[in-house]
View 1: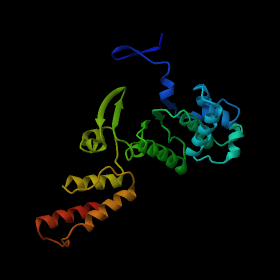
View 2: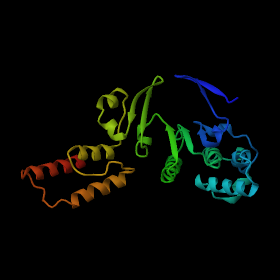
View 3: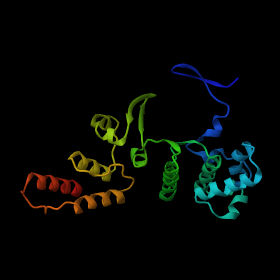
View 4: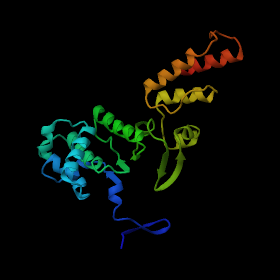
Length: 244
């Protein structure tokens, strides 16, 4: 009999093979490491999939490379000798080696430096490019909003909002109630879009936002001057938004 859990609609059956499709990275996954070498830790999942050892080895080194650990000698080190940040990378590599269809990350940025945060974001971007699903749990809207396709806000276990970042921007009462702040560059882009200009809003970085705004201004033929036509005033408003 398959295990079950009690949901809002009663008992829901759960497949025993769910772990093969869904990987969960806890907030401090480095605390869960239990194997004696880095290689064995990352290989634990693939070996439980009953994969042949050559494929296990291939997946281990591929996963270590994904988390920025490319030194071959690290695979044979005891995890206890590594720094906390490196142990977290090893723990994440252990999940990536399973190649889950869905990856759930619980506060993955907690305690990480800038390099570590950028690494997590890059892992998520690559999964997006491969059309793989990633669910990221975070208290920081700024950390996730440049990547997310869909956002869900929970309050005391209840869903109070679901939609895109653009949908959220159009809900100022939600932003105010939960003290949610959009990154400055997204505020600029959405304000320009709200004035009727055609500009890409699914921006993933401040550099991309800058490029979009520059391209918008380059494509305008009218010189922006005080006064002028309604169209020129509208364009000047967009520039003023950018200046803010």
